Image (cartoon, rainbow, N blue to C red):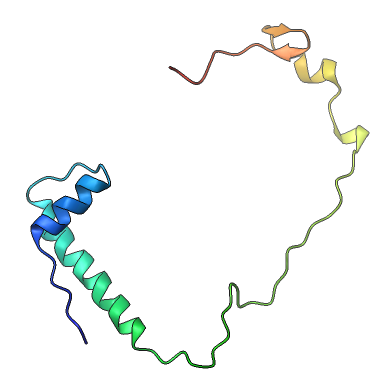
Length: 101
């Protein structure tokens, strides 16, 4: 098995590229964790997958969907929907802007 050799400067460089703040003592911790991940990936590369069909899911389940149906007796009309709000204009709710510049 190949052993990946990462340095603290590798970790600091990656954190900088990802725009992640990194404390000095975290580099060693993440170096150990990332090394373990990379070594495991190297192990997986050793697995013989010759003749194995690529797959994106393995359960055989398919999406279950139904046609949308309007059920008037279970839906609110416009007046009922707007009834609980004092902040209404042109049949729409008035709300504060959520996205700030």
